[in-house]
Image: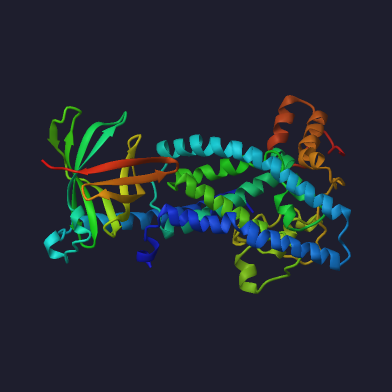
Length: 163
Length: 299
């Protein structure tokens, strides 16, 4: 078989398979962005569940890493059957706050009032990664959020924020 | 269909399934199958010291290979793969069914080319000849590796990382291809039904690959899918009874000899080649290549 035929057929295989994977990912991401642009149902529109809904509200997390020193206030909202946390306010080390752009950072997919599982966005060397995380309530005013991503893990303490 | 293919998969689930297929298969499939092969050898009155020592040598070469693989693997994965993934890759692909399936098929395709190179360039054959040097054909032969067998896969899997696949997914897919391959090293299973034989690599196809019969040389390089050989002109069906081994038999079960004989033979050949340019060419030219004015040396 000629080398040019080998090259042509091999490239065709690679383009078809990798192209297919990229197309599906692109289509899924497009769909996701359309979904997030849709009107988000209000907490009032979904059936209240008093065992779990107490997690709704503002929570503050202290960070002391090279990337960020200070605290971030998150706003947890119930949207459908999930709880989503959006960035609400950045606070520097002295406690001075600055309104944050509303970015979805955490999605709690399942929560029974004591424990939950979700997806947490972490930033590492300029890249954002969606990592699986666990939620463990300490009491009604604080919970632990833990994750482990290829050995890079952390446990964050989220405390109820009272402005 | 798109809905299903684009469905996101969690890393925890993915690693769990690969753990079952890749890691645990040794316990529930490979070891029981090898025991069955030993029983078959005994039944056919072919169970002798040579089979036992050859199998032991296979496992020992695997130990040596694994140590090199771990060292290279840690370096490659933590440094090279992630550097390439972060700096010179297409947009990163989500973890969904489409990317997992595509990654496994592409890893298999990369394996085809890597395997072909192992056979068709001098330095590749110097290490890969170890795998082919056993006169037997059983599951333990799948673990018979040469000293540099871990290097070529890294080179050939890097393009997958550049295409946007997560390095860990690439690694898991490569191991999956290897585990599938392992199961093909058996004489117990004859030919399977035609559609399977047409699409997949089977024990029959892989017996051909291990044959020292002239018509079987450099054929059936596939890992999972034999269609790559059909597509790229290297397919050969099993017709004549396969004689296992290499054209110049090793005739030793000493694990050290087994592990290094390819490299030793290659360096002997290099010694007999005149000129630096020709010596360098011997690394990338086919294993039977010699400068036009020289004859192939007998080892």
